[in-house]
Image 1 (spheres, rainbow, N blue to C red):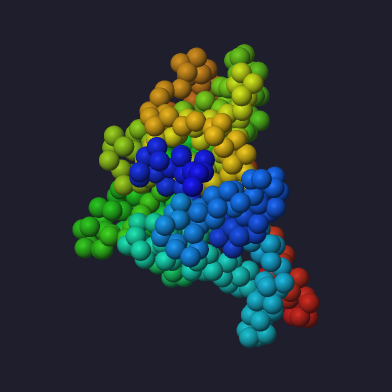
Image 2: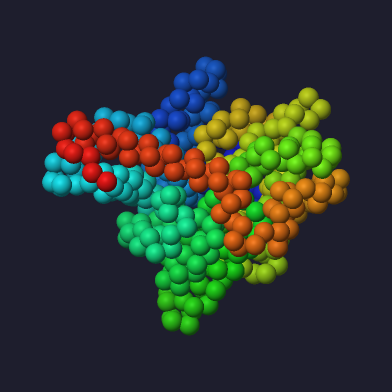
Amino acid sequence: MTESVVERLQKTNPDMEIWWDSSPLVFNPWVKKMVEAAPAGQKKELEAQLKRLILWEDLPRSVIRGCTTNPPLSLAAIKSDPSFWEKWVDDRIRSTPGITLKELWWITYKEAIRRGAEMLLPIYEASAGRFGWISGQLDPRLFTEVDQMRPQADELHAISPNVMIKVPASQQGPEVVKYLTSKAISTNVTTCFTLPQIMAVARAAQEGVEEAKKNKVDLSRWRAVITHMLGRLTEREVIWEQAAYYRVNWTEADRRWFGLGVFKRAYQLLKEGAYPSKMLLCSVRPGPLVNGKQRFWDIQELAGGDIVYTLPPYALEPMFALGDLLDFREGAIEDPIPESTVEKIYQMPYTLQAYEPNGLALDQFNTHPATIYTVGEFSKAVQGVEEFCSSRLKAAKVPVGA
């Protein structure tokens, strides 16, 4: 049995976790697509490696230990099997006279989360709640509305014991994290890009734990992860605009080291402060090309950490294509980024604000360029689910209410 590139990565730290960054509902179709596209002589081995990622016949032995979803990924799951979802939504319309569009999209979204949670529940049960989590995201359009996020979180938590609530790293997010943690409801902080955001929600989780302990709340199956959306931080055009304005010789390598540097600092600060949250890396991108050799720094340079990698198909595909060409250093996450990049980071507001623990005030979280971009993208995906539900209401000749 040849180890896959993902299995080799996982071996750099026994506490590292690899999660599937998509709905479990689309995993089997993705495996089929990958195997069909592989050269004839590689199909059998690739299929075996991919199927070990999620070992349906013995789920607790799977390489993948959890799953993250968000509105775009839930929309993709619905679009991957439209005939099933059309029937499911039509059944809800028939069984619930007077249902509004708002109610219909929400129960459809919750059903996509429920089905994914059900698929991973054996991992959760076998590990006594350590693994097997699936993230259910709050409506991104409400990322400033604490009074609406709280009941939504309670609803998502009620779906299944292995549903982890995705809370935004907005100005209001830490308050929601503290509230949920005090009730032993697990959280995954999303739309999170900067060190100030990471530290704010880490402190909120810590305070929530203290409150839960004071009230004798059982935390034995509680977990908290903080998602750093690396690519969404580093790809904003404002970096290049500021580099030109401040005359900083900003390179593609600097851009990549910048994102990695934020993650490395966050990892170190959480470890030094004994915070209860675990860092989760998402939004990874393959590259760069170094001396004619394709690299995957976003993965390689953080190897060896007690962290979570959540990997979507677009990240796993180049990883499997590169295979043995990707090498992993056990202590890579502890290695500093180049000092030349650090010097440049301190010359521009956007990079400085993300890299310094106090670089942003709480009331600046909601207007950060990466936040505006990502919340907008997530909100469009929610609208996509609403449009799907609206089309079924119209097909059933039911008035589309608010």
